[in-house]
Image 1 (spheres, rainbow, N blue to C red):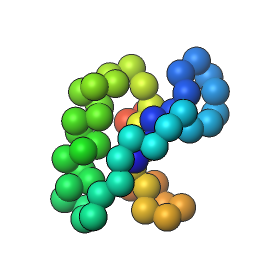
Image 2: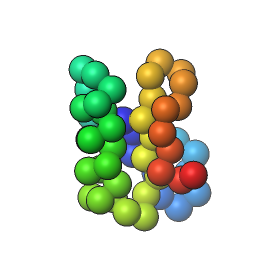
Image 3: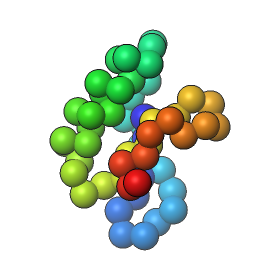
Image 4: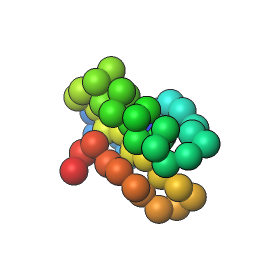
Length: 55
């Protein structure tokens, strides 16, 4: 789970979390959206984006 830089930067600011399974990852993603409502957050597995708060 990644939090992206605010203000047009196309780079990850920091890794918010890593999860052992998909169910836990989705729960953490939802919580992160609540903590950072105006920020882009992505949930990835390897190079594949599973969820993107910007979409």
